[in-house]
Amino acid sequence: MEKIFLLEDDATLSRGISMALSGPECAVILADCLTQAQEKLAGPSYDLLILDINLPDGSGLDLLRKLRDQGNETPTILLTANDLELDEVTGLEAGADDYITKPFSLAVLRARVHAQLRRGSRPASAKLEVGPFVFDFDKMLYRRDDLEIDLSKTEQKLLRVLVENRGHVVSRSTLVDRVWTDGAEFVEENALSVTVKRLRGKLEKDPAKPEYLKTVYGIGYTWAVK
Image 1 (cartoon, helix red, strand yellow):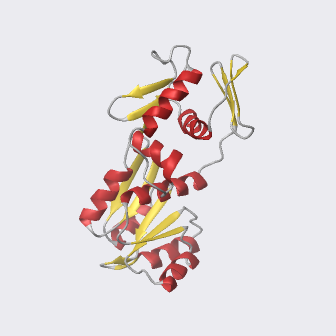
Image 2 (tube, helix red, strand yellow):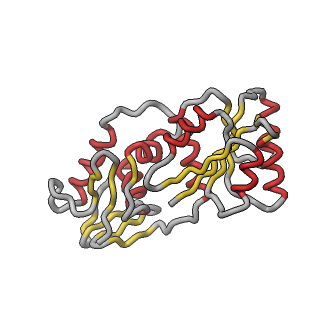
Image 3 (spheres, one colour):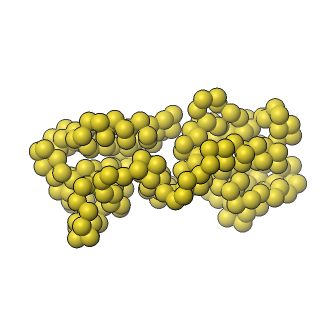
């Protein structure tokens, strides 16, 4: 499970971000002041840090500088109401990987978060053998029982997210963020369902009774481990 640390003193915003990012595959740990943040960051490591700059007892920017001086290279997103170009440059030069000004869309934040998590994660093998399938994502070659399968680029992206998280449920919002948006245009609500249906039609022996690409009702989808 991925762990995100969120330092934000606005309780309403903090709850909103936590609800937007939390799920079966992601936990969000909260802090509302610099003192609390320093205590929690002294414990187990995190996959991503989201730090507000303006805090009641200090600056998230100073905290980031201290972490970088200590050799902590955890991917970090800064949140701030300071929207001048100089503020953004200062944040990036302090070691931030991304910089988001308030107010912002939670959908865009999710996409930027997933982008940082992908960059910070250990590279997965581009070639996977899963049950009767061989998926080579670099060469864009897909087979079942030695029979080649033709997949669209969107189907390939969706398949990769699912098989790299096989055995775990991936929420619908996470799939939409990773496959389509990265902060881009609005995606129609049924786009994911349509793509899942097409992918099942190409991969499953009986798409009406899928063995691998399974629906977890009310949450999302999972690639079942066999």
